[in-house]
Length: 250
Image 1 (cartoon, one colour):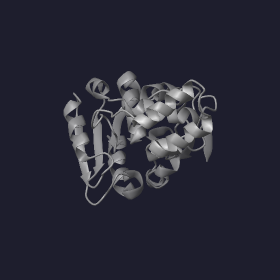
Image 2: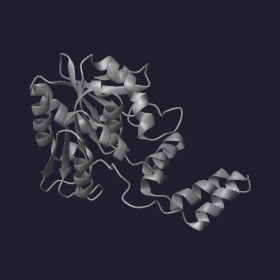
Image 3: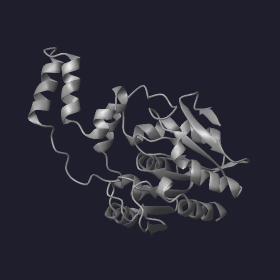
């Protein structure tokens, strides 16, 4: 059942009865439904959880202001307080893992354990400047010399698929996030961290998980899933459920 949180700025699906023990955070351009199968497996084992639609995705409205994962962490924090007085196991895929890492670093008492899968925790390469045609069009647009329609046509021509598909403030959120790296947050983590990576993840290679594990100061583990790609929650829900269940029991 879809429920509202944080004064209806966030919506999410509740799975199971009893106190909430797990929070699921989805990836870019995805939604809470990515966790339906894995959360259902845990609910059958008596573990209650909530999967949130992050701002601008699924049923949750876009944020009022743009910002990266650090901004999104502030936006979802009120929901954490509503879900449970006890620390939660937070599972984050891709974008959701960025947000979960910031939450765990800023509010360690709210996080019992952290599970990260397919998370772009560092910039893989220096960000290249946009093509000169795009930069020229942007300058002319800012000066009112070309229309919004023509500027949007330029964005569609030169932008990445995620950039082309995003609209409004969510597009600005994407621009902010691709420039971020989370080494400082990883180094500040106090809760145990489990990295769960698809062996065939071509979006966020396994080397990112190895680097991140070497950065965290506390207990951590790295689980590699053979034959699995970037979307661990939907490609390997049983394996993810088993790992999360162990963390809840511990």
